[in-house]
Amino acid sequence: MARSLLVKVTCGTDAPERCNQAFTVAGAAAVSGVPVSLWLTGEASWLAVPGRAAELQLDLATPLPDLLDAVLAAGQVTVCSQCAARRSLTEADLLPGVRIAGAPVFVEEALGEGVQALVY
Image (cartoon, rainbow, N blue to C red):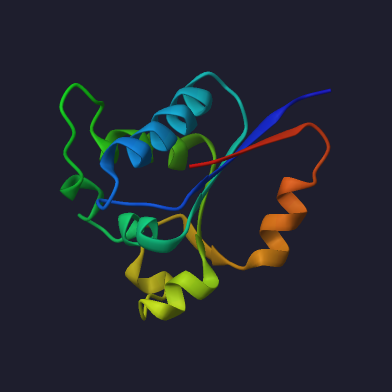
């Protein structure tokens, strides 16, 4: 049975260490060949807007844009639909390849066979 990783990030520049930890885990899994689905919720939603991931600066950490690119290249990045709506974001506002989806899609992914879900 193949395993996959579902990472939900609930913070952004308001909690840089926790946010970077989530992106680091997702990026490491993606470059290791693990199927990854990265969900951006709350303030993390902004990180899917072009240029915004670079605003998160953290000493001794891989730059967030590099981690985001790694996940986009090998996995799926999703912005929560309610979070996007509260911030007036549409898919046209987001990086290419980022989708907007809601709780039913998250639940479906989280309950998939062989899925390990982490929430930061």
